[in-house]
Length: 384
Image 1 (spheres, rainbow, N blue to C red):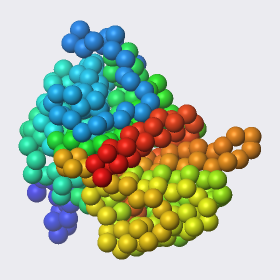
Image 2: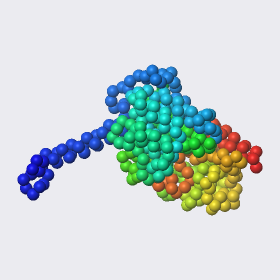
Image 3: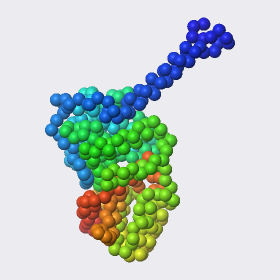
Image 4: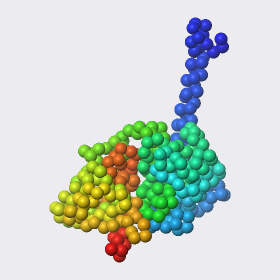
């Protein structure tokens, strides 16, 4: 019989070679789809369908609750980034929750003009939303293709948007606390935008490929330097080596100021963070927290019973904070130490067990975040 040996119906060497070749082609197609374009020919110049003069904004994007289709600052930036990505370039999106239909429509238009659009969403959270369904119909779900949407199993909570090029800007990466949802547009959020940073994009490209290949079983990896900043990718940590707890524990309390704006603060990890902050406050640190809508009863009791100043982050009209912010300042020589912890990491044990990002920002961004927290505190005071 063709394709079999004459001994007992076993596959022939030729059929085995064909099967191996087929598997190799599939593997190579996934690698090609997820590869870095810097390893190949230079991408083409922008097409006339995009604005070649467009420049991506860099630095911190802070958004107040607003209409996502009218005047939300960060949603407007996202749509501009997508609409100005020329053919031959690549967009990669990691999303916990994705319901914002105009974002899906802009990504589909980018795909249709020749942009490689690769999207990963949390299947359990976003699987029934219209926006991912539109992407599924337009891009397909084959991860070996240049464009695809992957409905990832497990709990994906990292939020990252990356662009090899948009307008005149190359190597653009945005990370932060904003979901691509109508609800997130109506919250206080922050996003960090890196522009012209190939080193940063390569770090997040490796993370993207790792998640596409291995979810839900993503292994631990070491923290990564991003110039003056540093990123920690979860999972892979527990309370014994929690990078957030370690950085707070290292803060000398005398003369220190710690400000937290937190959406979710729960369970054993949340209690451990609250105890540490209460101890710092008792030892002389100025500690202030702005609490969002998801705060555990034990955490709240502990904070209220300490010398920590507690502020509301849920306001009278229903607005709330979706930040995962910790601001730290303490005296030192020759100058004070100042840094901001942000990203997608809530103060929960769950955060240690799923794909998350904790980002440490050093330098002058502290002042802008500090003024932002001042505004949140002032709003809470005005309503009390």
